[in-house]
Image (cartoon, rainbow, N blue to C red):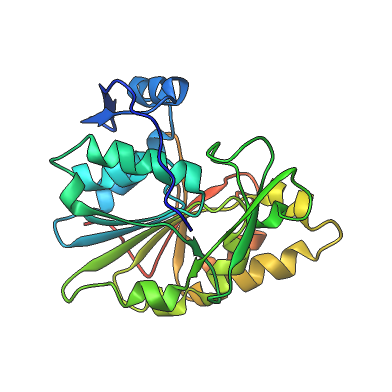
Length: 264
C-alpha cells in the first residue's frame, strides 16, 4: 500500500496528560479537549502509572497519536500500530513534529489481527475519524483493506529487559484479537489497557451470542485481575474469570488487565 501523506499544518503545543507535545494536524476540536484535560483523563493517568524507562508501550489502534505521544513523553519506547492510512499519515506528522519523542516511536501501518490475512475495514463517516472497524466492513459506505500483523509477530519486537504495556482500542475488533493475544502477554508483568465496544459488537453482529464472544475474548486472561478505568482513576480489582457477571461490566468500556498489582 502506498503510504498516505497529509499537507503540512501549522504546529502548536498542547498539554497531554501534563506533558507538552507539539501537534501538526487539522483535528483542533479533539486536541482542545486533550489540552483542557477532558479527553480520557483516566486513560492517561493509568498509562502514566504503568510506564517506566523499561516499558515497551504497544499501541494497538494508535489513531493520530494521543496515547503514543503521551507514552513516549512518559519515557516508554512505543510501537504504534494503525491500520487506517488517513490516520496513520496524521500520526506520522504528529510524531515528526516532536523530535524529542520521535526516536522513541515506531509506526506499523497494519491491522492487528489473529491471522496474517488482509483485513477489510469500514468507516461510518470517513477514514481517519477514529471510528473505523473491521466489524463494519459489510455495512459501511467507506471501506478499505489493510495488511495484518499478528500478536506473535509483535511479540517478536519486545527487546530483552522490556516490560510490555499494551493499549487496545480497535473499535470492536478486540473481540477477535484478544483470543489470539497469548504470545504478546507471556511476560509476567504485562499490563493490558483494553477498550471494549459492546455497541459496535451489537451493531455488527446482530443475533450473535454476545456472552460467548466476551468470554472467548477474556479467556487468555484467566487468573488475571481487572480494574475499570474511569475519569477519576481505577476501580476495585475484580477477577477476570468473574468479570462478565460483575455489575460494572457493560457500564465501563475500558479495563486494565494484569496478573497482579500492575503499578510501577
